[in-house]
Amino acid sequence: MADEVLVEEKTSVLWITLNRPARRNAINEAVCAGISAALASAERAGHLRAVVITGAGQEAFCAGGDLSPDAKGAPFEFTPADPRHYALEMFQRLEACRLPLVARVNGTAVGGGLGLICACDIAIAADHARFGLPEARFGIFPMMVLPYLMRLVPRRRLTELCLTGEMVDAEEALKLNLLNHVVAGSELDRRVEDCLERLLANSPTSHRVGKQVLRAISDMHLDQALEYTQVMLPVIAQTEDAREGMAAFNARRPPRWTGR
Figure 1 (tube, helix red, strand yellow):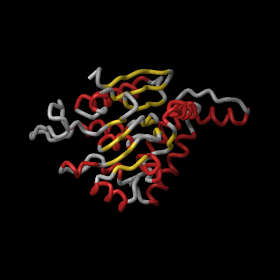
Figure 2: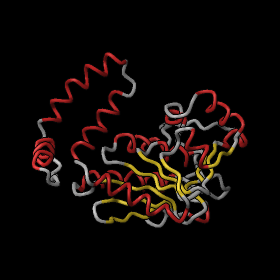
Figure 3: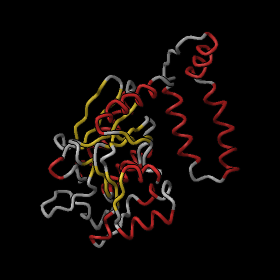
């Protein structure tokens, strides 16, 4: 697992790298477990402010589930007595993570790899990357990633992508709401660092509570969402970070965040 998922702290950011370039960084059970463990550790650490997920090399971010004949922890292995897919814990951990998640999309992403991008809060891709849902070509369907894709991509276009297995380029993926930004490959690291700099300048409490609220209201009716957010506004206003942010604004000085 340690070889297939690399975990590194850079300042206050945790970098998670899918490290299977020979398999185009395809997902298996060990990779999912490694990502889940890294995310859990990041939230427990306290001093980390964001997470970046990327792939090794320049060709592929993630080729989805490992379909190689000799793959260990292949995507269709399960125990009949406990039929929970190993990717479920990873996606649930991604969904519950209250640290900002940034996908550094260094190359092509298909199937589960595209789902991994969609599970992140911000996705920045190199312009040579391509994206698709080719599962129908193998007699299956992109089941595990559909819940994310249906929240981002227009229904008719998503259905077409699933049924045809069509690949799209980065600019089309941007139009489909799969990405936040597309940049030249040579500019990818600079753009990711710029994004992290802007994230880290803001309150960790606002990130933590804000992501919790976004998750809670995502499937609420409008009236329910308004009722919930009217309660959460004075809650977050009572935090130390909120008081510090207001004080810094009025004093025209940089804020000193405590994360409380």
